[in-house]
Image (cartoon, rainbow, N blue to C red; front, side, top):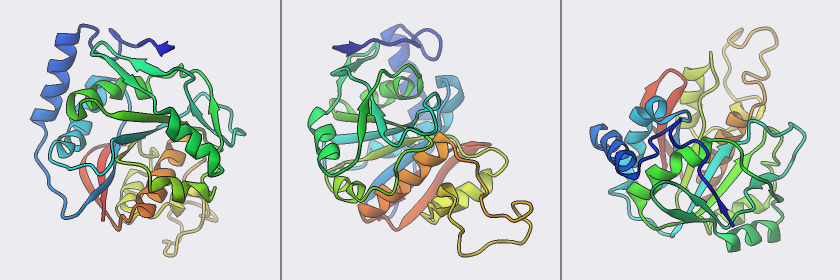
Length: 260
C-alpha cells in the first residue's frame, strides 16, 4: 500500500525534472556550513517549497558532507489536525510514500521497536502536507534511505522512557517545525542550548521578569510544532548531542544543527 502524493502541483512541482532541479537549486544556493562535531539532528521549517526551501536548503546542504551512522532517517512532523488528547504518535498505514521522484519506504521494523519499548504508535492516514513536502529533499540529498515518518500531536507522550532507548537505533533525525510565533528568538536560544523545557511548559532555570506576561510560567501554548521541537531535542540529547547551531532563519522559519 502506497500513500500517493496529494500536494504535488500545489506545494511543489509535480514534474519530476522541475522538482529535482528546484530542490537542487535550494541546496546549491545555501551557504556551506560545517559543524565541529557529529551531527545528530537537524531542524527545518515547514510550508510550501517556495516558503521553506531557501531556509531548509542550509540544513540539507549540511547532510551532503555528513557521514551517517545508520540508514534509518527519522522524520518528526507536527500533527496539526490531530486532537490534543492523543498521547500516541502517528504514522501512515502505508508501506511507502510516493513522490514525483520515486517511492520512499516506511521502516516497519522501527515502528515495531517503538511499540516494544513502550512508545505508542497509531497507524493513521497522513492527510497533511508536512512530511510529503520534505521527502523530495531527502530523496535528492540522501538517496535511498530507510524512513520513519512520525507525526507528533500536541498531547504526545514525550516523557515515555522508551524514547531514549529507541534513539540509539535512529540515524539522523529531521524535525520539521516552525518556531512559536512572537517568541522566535527565545525559541532559537532554547534550541541552541538544547533546552526543551521551554517547549514542554516546564519552567526554565533562568527567566526574565515579565518576559512572558503575568506569571510567566508557559511561554508557548501547547502546539504540535512545540512538541516536535521538544522531542527532537530530547532524542538528540539521547544520541549524545551537546550543542545546537543556527544555520539560517527568516522569522518563524529556521534551520538548526544539533550535534555532539
